[in-house]
Length: 80
Image (cartoon, rainbow, N blue to C red; front, top):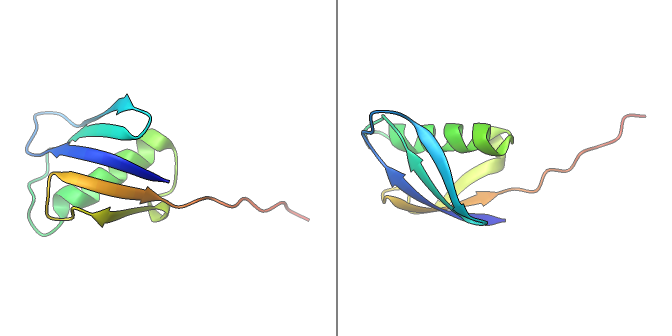
């Protein structure tokens, strides 16, 4: 699954807002230096969507405010 994210950097507070099924706006305090803002985007999305960080991957827009994030399918195994 892919989602489209618009990032607002150097915000006063951090939040995630769902626009529709696959569009989000994210406010981060971190500056876009050395990937810090991207790391925060992944962290906030992970918390909001309740998925592990490792299941999120920025596939387009790493150096842009508009990003496409891929959410890898989670396969849950049964014990036993």
